[in-house]
Length: 478
Image (tube, rainbow, N blue to C red; front, side, top):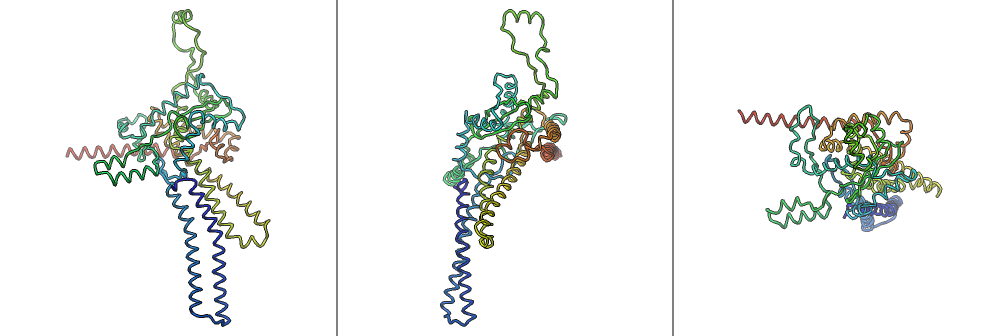
């Protein structure tokens, strides 16, 4: 019941109601004290019974004030605690204050053609987008790479069982990730927790374990939607959405594909080996060959996979829900409550200067709230980018790519973005819809260092497990 945007709005409304009564209670108590002090100083006769009654009323009003303050505080922190969850694969604590019904509504709006409509509205902010058709060879290349990465998602749910050979590789082979402490499991709902609790109490011991680990909900997502946009000046991609039936997907700009294909020489179709006889016979008894196009090299496919794995990680971790909850519920609601409290505190000062000063303070509060929201969005975006890099390395490794290449890739991207003079302006825009577009991803040293630390952790854990295994074998032999 508490994990919903309406809960935070209820806490905000309760805060405003309490702030309305606080001045009344404080002024009433202050007036009662003044009367008693005046009577004591001027010798006004008052019975002990009336004085005790007056002090009792003051205490009751004070306890009422504490009780009123406790209502919004308790409701606010109960909503926060009810909405806390650990991000799969990384274990980072995060807040998603959206009810299951609100999440289902978002997924239903984005399912099927809804995703393309929503993404089309985002892309239309820069003019009508030019979409690359699915018959284009570049679309087939990107889709094949994306589906290869998608195929590794089931492994993330049961890594020890589905990939037990992570220790079998040699030192000269690409590193493999150790099983995650927080596997990719469906995000349970409050009703699911209640059902597990009831089953655990009502069932016997034999069925208790099965009831506690029952997971009726599936991990929504694959296959994800894909859209290629012909925009040579944009060398990036972005992910968007949440839910099954293509409710989440990735948009790739042609500028990124052009950069990848230009950095390493591709293999033209005309260089494929064929004899003159087969070419002659083929020209007589077959239809005209399709248009020639370059064949991407494994290195080029690896660069494409690195970017797609990064964007795919955003979808796997439901970062869209987290950003939506943070930008539209958590940050505005919290800042609104703090602003109301601040205005009540300074009201004795502002009321002396009339309505114009009050209006100016209110407007200043709106501007300050907007700036704080932008900073909060930037911090959330940075955490998600670092987290997506870490999880993308795991996807790449399971898909057969070398995760170490991701470090080189992002280092090159970082130097390229820093050398562009026009890359500074997009970074100053904190609008949520603009942050996920174009060149707004903050590629910097923090992300690269986070990726290096993750790969180093793989090697450290692998060496530790092998050492413990050898020690146990040596002990058994003795």
